Image 1 (cartoon, rainbow, N blue to C red):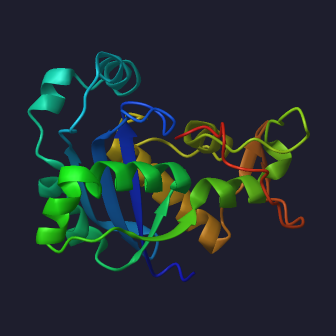
Image 2 (image 1 turned 90 degrees about the vertical axis):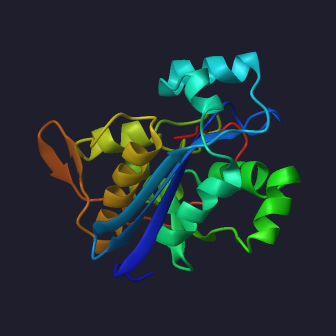
Amino acid sequence: MSIKTFCVLDTETTGLTRDRSARVIEVAVARFEDGQPVATFSSLVRPDVLTEEGARVALDICGIHSEDIQAAPQPWEVWGGVLEVIGSHPVVAWNMPFDQQMVRRSFFEGESFEHSKRLRQYPPNWSECAMLRFTHQFEQYAARWDNGEPRWFRLETAARLVEMPWEGQAHRAMADVLMTGRIYAGMLAGTLVARTGGVEHPPSRGGAWHPAGTDGKPSA
């Protein structure tokens, strides 16, 4: 993919995909051109379901209070702002399988689907999982599963490995989007290096890595 233009999307949610009541409560997107963000959008989202456990997750992980979630715009109201930034450009996410499922569930199912259809809204043009690319390139630094396969890097762990400073708070959607975009741009440009013990280490150029599956993989 050309480094010229790509978009990054991130969601904060009330749980993992295996929890059928989990929903998106915050979404952010950024369009990058030549490695720099040129347009951004973020918003809290009012889900159709917010359980007591989901509210606790939102507060503990993201620092988002339930009253702010309940006062947020409806999913279809938020999605219009998302589309203004991403258009038909390719969209990257750190943990793309997770964000794909949560976007579909929160914005394109049930009542939200009826509204999105009426408003002629459409899903992202999903392109690549940045976490998969990063794990492939920096596999030598990855923790391992019992079977020897590399664990996928959490975004925070990846940022620490390449010493990329945060803009904002980790586990808030816009901070995660900007971090993902900067790391992804670095991978595309071939300028990203691991920094351990004060020494720069270029990424591995080994053979292709094929993960065993996505079950149990960490979200950003």
